[in-house]
Length: 91
Length: 115
Length: 161
Image 1 (cartoon, each protein chain N blue to C red):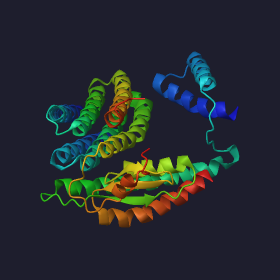
Image 2 (image 1 turned 60 degrees about the horizontal axis):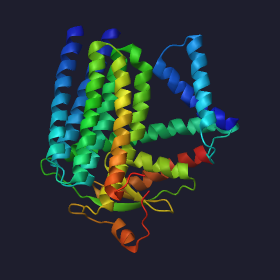
Image 3 (image 1 turned 120 degrees about the vertical axis):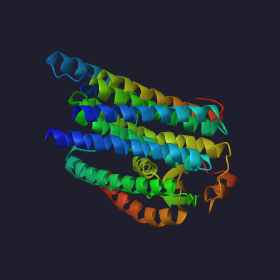
Image 4 (image 1 turned 60 degrees about the vertical axis):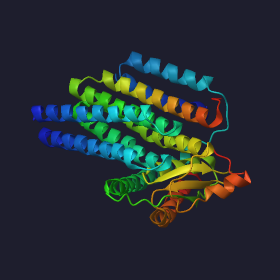
């Protein structure tokens, strides 16, 4: 059973890394700024998933702390960038 | 007992990954920003939450951190989607083949103030 | 007093969940930090639930969570079907949904639950609380959202009246 969990987690991890790469490619080749911003949000969400999977693999909850920090930072940065794009100022 | 929980965790991981995959495919296939936001919202609502449930089942140390992260993700992802959509409508990105657009008249009158 | 308790108890619970041990020294440090942050918060008019209505609030809140969870699962499956369809049967548009809620918190919660379910997305909102909602499939969403919104509105008014 342990080996099944391990193999599934590795496959899922590879799939998430691949999807994060696709999202990063869409950040580079976006149609307009808002589409790039959406792709950036998608990439950071998939990176969050990668951190959660690493915490499953290592059986270590310190990666969950990193995931919480990444979630808070990506939320703030995406909202600030969207506001900057629409208003040309942050505050 | 432990075996059944492990099988449930593996199922949750696979279902979450499938939903994330559908979200990324939807991001590539959809024609404009607003419809893409529907697809990417699915990644954070289903993909992350299912992976977190699997993580909670598989490593009991991270129970409370996982619950806090589920709460935060479910609280934050709608406001991210709303802020991106609001910015897109304010800089005037067009909708692709809209069936109807109730907001356009309101914006031209000038009193459709965004939040 | 009730304002400080209302802010500091959630902060204390989050501190305990993140630090993850329940030794007395950690409990004391967490209580001090959370009360200190609550004292430093600026005084604003916030909407708090009075103590004697707490059971009714919790019961309506749990029912609200189940209603929203069911809507989220339904929206996710229908959006997945649209994405995986080879013809991509989109019928997008922006429709108006009245929130019907007097309080700001009720309006914010109904906008949150509408945006949380894939398939609907609140784009803008005006001063009367009308939500301009982008939908993937206009006809289906309009039919569905009308009944879902009345049910959620009923529960929200039970929570915050």
